[in-house]
Length: 239
Ligand code: 5RP
Figure 1 (tube, rainbow, N blue to C red):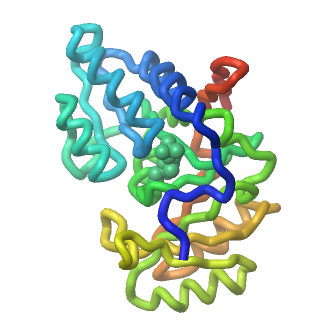
Figure 2 (figure 1 turned 45 degrees about the vertical axis):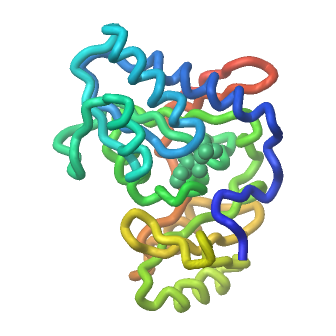
């Protein structure tokens, strides 16, 4: 079994600096009065911290935020960002989130941090979904560098595992602290090694057709912007 949050290939030590650059760049797009979505992970947290700093300096006012995970909610509250509770009362103006893999069409694999379901709910409710990544996340084809996380109910989870295997994946239940990893919803994650996925939209459709399979990390057509930081500087890609 593999550990959670482990890529198939190392991204290298400089990734941290690039994550910070991408996250902070995205935070500069937040404007006063916005409802914003706060992503999950080591890149999105840089955006969250910068948003908090802008609020406290008086540069931003009237911000309310919704978090994509319990972890990001706790972080945002500690940073003093005004938070909405569990529900999404109206459209979210802009969400800043990370990704594990980004293809040339700006489709994504997400869920390395286990927050894929809430991340997708928030992304689908957002007018703008800004993805922040270091250049090591760019990929010619989804699945090349990363396992596809699939969130399943505990009830019948082995049948979902067999389904994923029948679709060609090598499947490993995610483990944390020697137990099955649990999402914020109490579900299980099956990390599925498909290798390069020729038809992500088709695969997403097949996965969504199955009861008990409550979410997957393919984010097709959801990113409006991708901010990529790397040796060549910061690039801002738009859909
Ligand atoms: C969490 C996610 C993260 O956004 C994704 O794993 C990227 O994380 P990081 O910025 O730490 O590399 O999808 O579920």
